[in-house]
Amino acid sequence: MENKDIIVRAASADDKHYAKTVTDEMEASAKARGTGIAKRSPEYVQLKMDEGKAVIALTAAGEWVGFCYIEAWGHEKFVANSGLIVNPAFRGHGVAKAIKEKIFELSRKKYPEAKIFGLTTGLAVMKINSDLGYEPVTYSELTDDEEFWKGCRSCVNFDVLTAKNRKNCLCTAMLYDPVEKAKEAEEKAAAEKNKLVITTEGNMQEERKKRKFKGNFSLFERWVRYKKYVLLKAARKGGGSGAAGSSKKRFFFGWL
View (cartoon, one colour):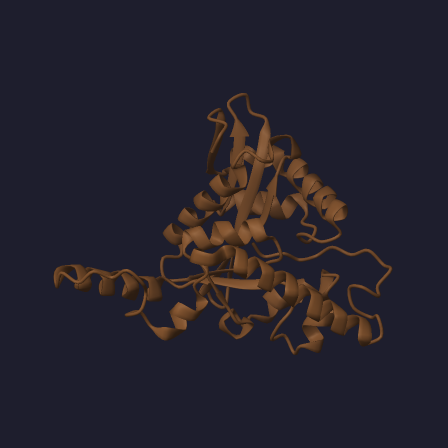
């Protein structure tokens, strides 16, 4: 992070007075983009602080800089890091990455066996997730918890999601699987022990190889844009009831 005066840490009950500022910025950011995270109440954000399931970024002087929280789904088998927001005055200084790293660390500590996942349209967030070990997956590999998917109803692209039977949408699904990562570590350790030099992931499982895009993120970026083009075009042909045809502004429910 460029600004060394910014402190990124786990939020606590002492930070609850920042909740209204956080939710106001969430709403303003969503309106400005036309897409973004769903609106959350200050009381909900305060609950996450009380539970120790949130990360906050502040300046040394106590000015609010950023925020993110944890939500568990499917009997804690899945975890999502949600509501990532950064004060506009501090954007472009690596704050989002620092918050994502801290909330990921907190999630692994609180839910060591859970799969951590995200749904996002933001390429910058996808890159951060990739650096943390997330991999792109199909929607079928995410939680089937209906409470999670209910949140998508506030999305401007909800019609696209339902038209695809919840199998695809403009968001890209990304997943961190601790079991899979442990297997990767074991394979690498075994290779080193036997003095094998692995220059590619050829010895890894084929499915994991297909998911990887760290080495060619620009190619993945073009694929994401093409995916959006195709899905939005299909929504328009479907009668304009989707994102492109709706004149009513709604919030997008983004799981980062």
